Length: 326
Length: 235
Ligand code: SF4
Ligand code: SF4
Image: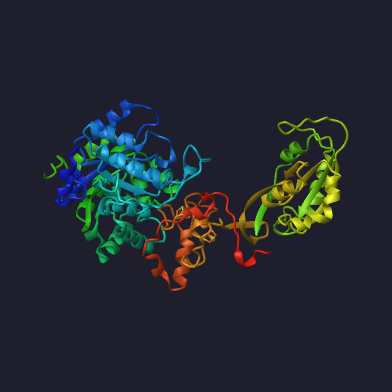
């Protein structure tokens, strides 16, 4: 993980992360999510990391998710790494301008972080500082391009080389670049075009918004394959197990860009054990996605349910997780 | 035009606490059209202030309310408060008052303050945005004066202003049925508007390539902006 530079630059890999290696080897990968604590609580990061260690290939560390202040994704990603979890650091465009972003990317690389997901970020009106000023100096596509240029062209956003002086050698941060895609937002036909823009900008992998409406996801994947996008970029299908019917209704009614069919809500409602039923639905979804051409893995966002991830992955027959090739 | 709305009356009264004779000064341009600071609003506001003449409210910080006597209001409306020459006819009247309550936008209030260095000038309005009148009593923000207009690329819909995140490569994942995640009841997704418009024009290919990062130095981020044009400089 903390391998030296020379080795990295010789490598056939862009970043050398586990996630990149497993995807390159054609493994069906599993990523999960770890939401950092809302206080300076190291124990919580350790506990959550413990639930996920060995159960998944890499773990997204969210960046002030839903615009609520938490331990920074940079710090939490490093701490997760120390707990034996490969982090996928998330970075949103809401809270930082291009200077802060590039500084954090350099720092993250030095701290051993090799995967970076570039996001617009939820608007601050959803969080606990709705009167804050947002940044959006760059948007997510421009951020992807910047991270790619830092890695492949060894330049900053301004075009300057990433080196200490004219004679020094360039020391660039080498990230495996992720992005998000939402097949359930509008305008539907434009969603794949925007995905293609992200791929052209440099996205190596995509994690989708959580899928409940499998029909719409299939139609989206048809469009993805028609454009050959699954061959240019690895697509991980996003899933969030439903815990209660109330949670399902909340997501359907209150969260923008989520489509949740009534049939699923009925299943949870009619079940005597809604949590078990939620897990069962999730496992069925994994099976269906595994057989879908162009889906390279899943991204399991078990919100405040990290301790159930191992169980879900096990039931889906995806354990033990493979060891990445050298 | 510049769209503004009147402040809460208590805030205005707070500013005027302790003053005896106030010029209530309207502006005949944008704020007249958006029904916030024209002749009519001046008359209404002045009478409200006179009726509540005791000004029994919390004085603004640093202002002492003597608590006696009534407030005297003078009314006037000039064509534009953002142009010094229009102040000439009201100079005398202004000098005879101990404060000016301006119903202009922030630009007008600032110019009034500059022209009357020894007189307190207070704003009666909150300047909201540059926009259009959509229907009776409804206005919409359209332009943030970014200094580098890209409407030609985006089908005449401004992504900087109409997108809640000012994205150059939208729409984000929060766009649903034409509405923005920030307020799906009231805010249209600016990027849906851009998409629809370019589609109608048969120019969707404009959106295939990623728009590069913006040059925000041309906005207020680069400091307060000035413009000087050699071709019109006199003398
Ligand atoms: S692009 Fe700039 S100048 Fe043009 S409408 Fe938008 S904010 Fe105004
Ligand atoms: S939903 Fe549309 S308007 Fe709102 S932030 Fe996203 S792209 Fe911008």
